[in-house]
Image (cartoon, rainbow, N blue to C red; front, side, top):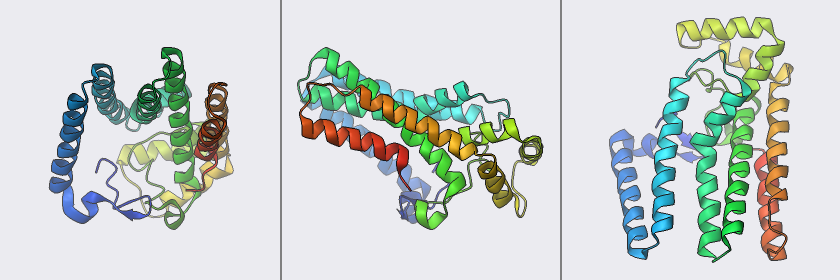
Length: 238
């Protein structure tokens, strides 16, 4: 709903099928039901974790919204948004898994960091793919990040190298929308300046960091699966 997308991962989005009202209400129900289940389980540490991450996700989305068309966005600011609106959920999932498997406090903390790196890599690839692939391949609308005011890492790097692109982005931000041909022009320019390549390289860096965090004591099969997941996050074609 926030992204105004009619598709997600190749399938119709909930709001695209049933509308915003039903989607909000069912989403609220799922959140409340999940917390009911966690309360019944009686693990206060995990209940606190999921309460905190739900709050953090909302804060992250608001942070991104506050930086709409923030043309001076730096790489560090971009990564902060990614960590707070996306990676924190990956972090929580990894932490919960380790905790539920009765791992040591040290392993739980290490897996939480693994999840954070995994989430950053995944989102950086998402940002790169918005400029690289077509909607059929991505399974969702593409080329909309800038139109929605999202200044992501591919665009940041490309604007640093291309004054004409930077001027065009400023023009788009002033009118708040694309005109005919803007979307493809910007996508081609970002790709030509290798903004997508820079973002993908960062994604690979985070994936490698995630793999280095995997405990040596973990079962080989589990460790390999988690390493493959990290690799996929930074090399996925969709």
